[in-house]
Length: 283
View 1: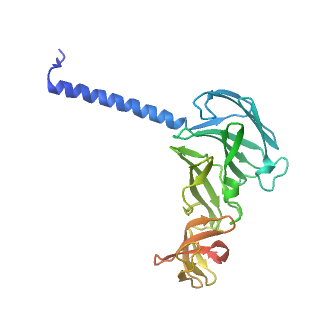
View 2: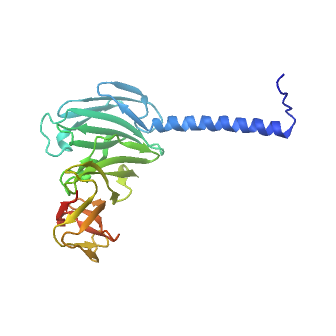
View 3: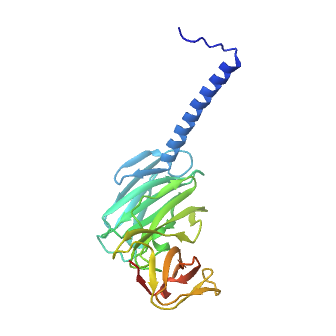
């Protein structure tokens, strides 16, 4: 015969409360997980959507997108917007766009964004642009390609999916600083008015693809050059020696320049303009 529970006893009440608490927590976890999944929704070209709030007003909107090799058309509640690839893709030429991914990003503060991830003719031609709808206008909140394009050859956003968490959108970039391989780094963006702004300007580098037998981010300096305590500072941290082993730690990309943080074997660090580097890989 099963044990009879006395609902009048303190132990029974404690047991029931504990069971209810566990049940409510499991529901909360399920709800939070579902909400997190809905922060990023992949959309398809040529399909009409009526189940999502695009404008952020709490109402479901009508969305339709179509794209060709030279333009993208977006319809939001019968308002038509045309984006030409050549307007935001450097060195564009007809036919360079062969795959386009569309996303709806929803932040915890209620802001909605349309993300456009374009893969060009070659795998290293990746472009991420993010747009926000305001009444009668589609504003480009972030053009990740142009922000980091130029200081270092090969720098650009990658084909990794953009991540959304809370009020933060994260984009992964890559670049070749030394010929030892390709380095990845993540940039977090948060809303600032109708724009998305980076939360910092210095990023930790991860060696992604190794080449030439390199096993680390270490290289040898081929000539002397000064490193500085801060980006843009005139206070010297240390001067390298010819043949000295240095390790790449961080990157600080700017509109026309990029700075890298180098660490000596004794642990001392210093910043240097990328253009000043003269190196040889260490295998």
